[in-house]
Image (cartoon, rainbow, N blue to C red; front, top):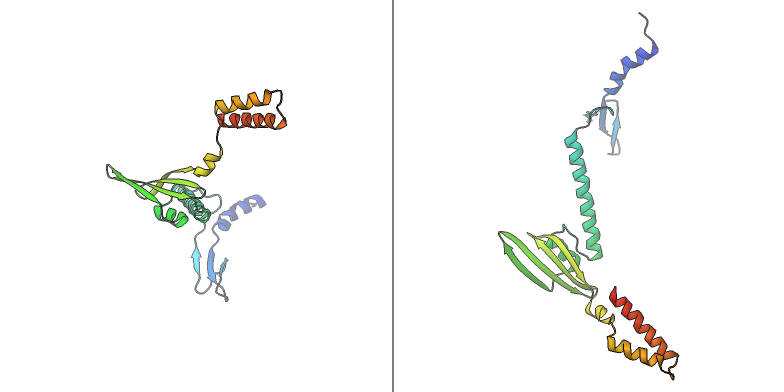
Length: 188
């Protein structure tokens, strides 16, 4: 019987897929991966690329990646001095320092806290359940809120009357237009 090149290749494929691979230390102390056995080496069991994927291993790998990304997000939030949902209260304090006030409650065995930080960039309300951040609120500083004062209807009427007066100058008209812009911004 004659063996064609195709049959020969097909017969050799299982042998190639089962090649032995070794993890060996080199002279510099680094790890080398090779097909030749070595002293102090360890044989690795490598599944062929076309082997079925273990669903549990894939799920564990994905979970590990999510965990690594979450830890990186927490480190970034600590560096920005901001809270992040999923942080522990210790991590929040690492990011923002100690809170100005803490309101605590225990509902059916669940410890719930509201920690309040008053900072120049605003007031932060961080809500935790059993020591883990569940919700975050931020309120602009009071001076920033007060800076956006809405004109009253009387102020608008007075500015309109002044702008329509025969002796009105450019300043009265501009003041009225400015108050109208402020009023439109207040509606949004």
